[in-house]
Image (tube, rainbow, N blue to C red; front, side, top):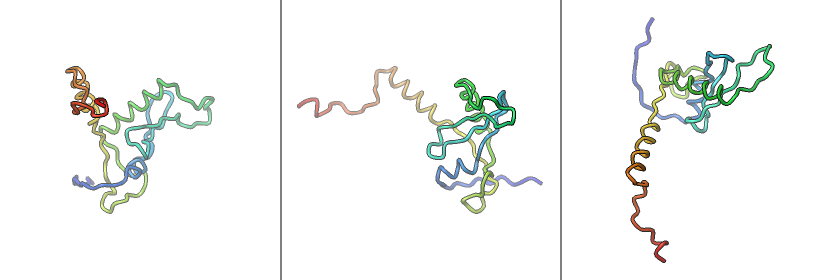
Length: 130
């Protein structure tokens, strides 16, 4: 049966977000797992999926970037937060969606730089005048 969609706004520590999402299996060659950094939700860690035949456990930089990019795409579409028990009653079927606000901020900063605005609103620095 379908679970009704209910929007809930609440705050939880970012480590709980990483923990309840758990590792994301990334379908690529080689198969990878990507996790969210529990102390910085904007950082991800990609590792090769363990296997008995694995001769080299390391990923190339390109493979890591691809796996993390795919994980971010999965998160944009929503991931059920059920890798561990929920820290909040009623949030057992919560889904996490990645919303990329930082890209908008970076674009605004780039626009300000193009206009010659360094983002510093101070006209004069008193220490420079001494």
